[in-house]
Length: 496
Image 1 (tube, one colour):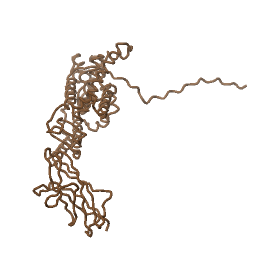
Image 2 (tube, rainbow, N blue to C red; image 1 turned 45 degrees about the horizontal axis):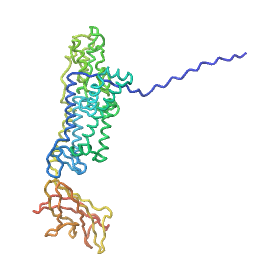
Image 3 (tube, rainbow, N blue to C red; image 1 turned 90 degrees about the vertical axis):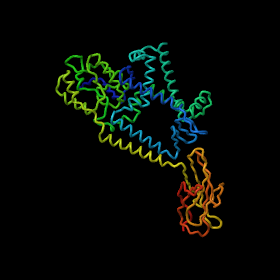
């Protein structure tokens, strides 16, 4: 007789592991020490420069902005103290950016992520926002307790006070940014009285919002996920670069402060002060911005335990490997620490990598200085008509049209220059609305610190033997007959 097998219990399938971890809010603890003091000093200097520089005045004469640093979009000028750059001189700005990039590479090769940990705008403003947060909500433990507690009247009071302070800083940041593109006193008054343009208010809101979100909410996520620099800065480092490191040869094994363990007591002070929430004892990590706050935290613990500072320090990977090899097999204690420290050598700053960076920097500086010394104060650009390429006149002659643009970079000086055409004999030059001198040459008047535009016509009489494209040259000549500037172009005609 057949028997029916009992139903087997159904087993629920195992859930697929998530590829994404939920964000864990980082609550750094305040720390005091040498590195923290340096960071405060850098923060104050950089923020003071950012907020104050637009208010510096620089007398450039009548009709010109007297702001020391200004990107004047309406007049297409960039003013920096005595330097004035025109749109045609954007290569100077390009050179400055290249110089800054190579300089950053050189600094990184020597001192690791110095930019990220001390001078990056994200780091500076995040430090300021966290300082405000501590002043209002308290230090790490108080903030954690507040977040885990009930949303009562006190919670709302502290949170609203913090965000109001953050918003005030963000608004000051957005307002200062606008001042780099507009006269600071004028745009400030216009914004306060509601007379500024929608563009000004739009950019003010944009930079206020980005500062508030990035420094207040995103924080370490900007460095970890948004910034590309951590992903390729490793190419700038080598074994002689100074980076924040944990001396595992001295700290391991972790445990109680006794003879059986190393100097690390696993207090996690380095983790609690880290603005990105990592454990530096796990080695080099993408999230580490090299701020060095863990150095101060660990030094404070070592001082309380009566042990040497420097368990976490700015160190080269070369020295870390040398110390590790020197203490191999040694038991924890003063002898092991002394052997590890004795194996260290001074950082080698002059090496092929840094020499290459130094050479590139000097080359770019020399190139920019040479270009500045050869900078022309008068330029002429010639744009030949493209449609049509030429016009055939009723008598059989050929005419080409040209647009001439004269840029006079001298202030307080209008120039009156004669325009001369060099080309095949028989070509005739006329300039619309231009006077002529005794020799019949058109006289072009330039505007001081400005651009003037003229319409020129070149005519070939009937029967003049020309190719379909003939080279011609326009020259500007002063009253003494000296050629100041030349510009080449072409005279077009029908194919022969």
